[in-house]
Image (cartoon, rainbow, N blue to C red):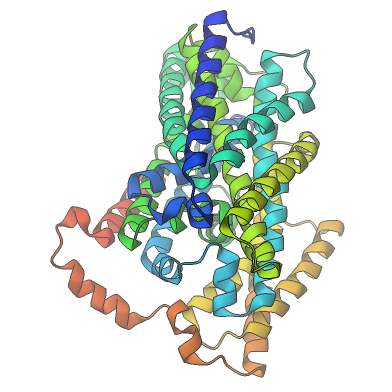
Length: 522
């Protein structure tokens, strides 16, 4: 087992990195001239920044610590969440993204108000805020706290979490979304360098893949698991994972906010597809190292310790400091993302509605104060995640109860003009009661099956109440509906573009690559 200590050189590298990040945040913060600049980066982001920021924000909370840990404990089937994300993002780019960007909204709850009414907006906004704090921000803080506690074992977990919250909160509060996206770009480079180097060194140290197969059951090296598997059954993969994926990537404010910052639809689409592409190598550089760790460290007490152990055991001085900085940066990119989205939701969905006379400058400072308050709340909750079996299981279990009504309301709202505002609101209300019952009841059902069951119930509620209530006027909701006519017109426009600029061809190639990967590792 390695000693979790950092040399002075490593500590200096980490300190210099965070000084640079803070400087960027403060500098960008001084350039923000209004709410659009602060909350949506002036809607000026190009596709590389959109895609990289989406990727960095996601991997920080679920991948570096969570995926390798689950691969170590239960097998590589955990990668199913990653390749399914690529499929969901392709769907988003093709069908959903144009309506969202054309609406020029600040938040996804605001989009719901445009399609339905204010009741759905406020309910979804409140639900998203709870998710931002209890799931996204707290999960990332907990993962970072584990790493810091391994380096400094005498420091309590809650103090490590508080330090991370203050660091991420500082540049987020100061700089807004533009600061978050720019720092994400730097962090992604460090994340990928660290993950690739660790994977290569781990593979070299185990002396070949046969060492993994010798100590690992065959089913733990397969993506597709039997229907009775307790971790990720194939039925849950087909029925439940797409629901969680659609919620996380397409409707969750802290991910969607990056797409809302795109300068136009094309940049939004290219950025979304870039994020989908970056999800596929995760199998080799972040999941399989967890399998290799079964050879190197067969007796780790906690699977969430796998990735930090790989870092300290395999990396030399200097490179260790750089990669630890990147790892902490990855965790912080989720923290900064959720804090920024939470402040956006409170400021634009609630404060601006209550105080429409407030100036942009006042709203900006309100957003900064809100981000600070949520930073404190998330830091207070994060230590309790230790009670769950693993970080990744914590994240996915809670999503199973939050996602289904949101997905049902958005899907029917986009593809069916008959979906009504009353139906959307009562779907949220009823599903909340059912979720509370399922959480406290002794029902023995996999959380992915629970997600699908709730989704079906919500679709039935939406359809039934919509049929019993007056259909919305088409002129009001038309901009928020998917239309086959627009799809056909776009097909004509795309004929004149080279293949590498045709997002549909790129999307199709992505799907082929994804399917190939799944077949090979099935």
